[in-house]
Length: 437
Image 1 (cartoon, rainbow, N blue to C red):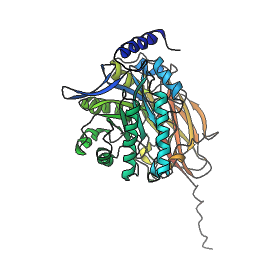
Image 2 (cartoon, one colour):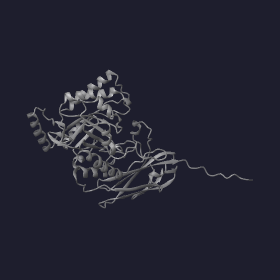
Image 3 (cartoon, rainbow, N blue to C red):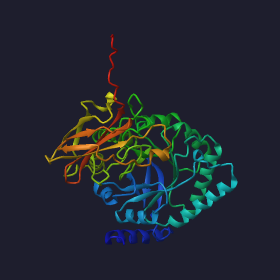
Image 4 (cartoon, helix red, strand yellow):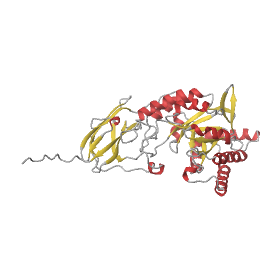
């Protein structure tokens, strides 16, 4: 059920739309150029996307000053779009398209026809939802896809969407590898807006788009800290994850210097990931802890979206060490050894801080995506005598690669996260001295 004020807004909007011939419940969205600047108009009013990509905590998006959410698929879309509407959020609704790298053959006419019918059904199902902002056809369809048939199919689908729903624009999402923009330009004229997932490459995105000749509006459909595929690594190639404090600083710099600064062409962005998910580690992308506490990244977004800092800010992490070494030292310890872990953290409000520690087997950078996204379990009995901001660590008895994680909480719904990869080595054999007798 919608809140009363939302019902009143929807009713008023529906009456105005009916007067213009727009179907009841629909809030029409247009892409326009005004005074040399690309802009969305939603319900006839300028609309700059202050968005989050995720499936949880929609009330927190609204409270932080955000106005939109990104969904990658129509799975559970009825429930999620209703939740967005209840919080006065619009939805970039994704329709999942199969990718070549996952075995879909775009030369197979029957596969293409089945996908076309699937897209048609999704559009007919959701085109009248009042939360709908735009359609997003596929996610990172450019990965290992140089086949023009891929882009022809995207354009055909965009034309179908426009035919069935002339009231909402259509986008498609590329990865940060922008070499395929030329293919979108050449083969997808029906695409109204380009969306790009960009993490470490975000800083050069506007320049790259100009270099590839993209002149239509664009959206940053995922952004945050560095991805594990582009981060510094240990000597055994374990990526070094930024702490939530460092990611928040990067997010602020990226938003102000690259997203807001490009408003002549960039019509908004979706922070990734609003919620918590496991991908390579259980903290790499989430803006919240697994227990639902907000981090400094949420604080920064609230300040950027609303102009106001939250009343309670997240703790600040200064450092994390294991056996007196930081992550850049490529830490290694012998099997079964006992070493100490320490985390340095402060809290602006002076709240008492507590730390939660765990050790998990580490993922490998060359694993398939499905393997990198399959959660590992914390090792039992690996953490001993955790007090304050320190803990005794018992190294696993199996040599291999592991990761120490810590979450520092203020007990009031805010926290900070960090982790450190380390290698467990076999104990050296006792030195044998040969007898001369």
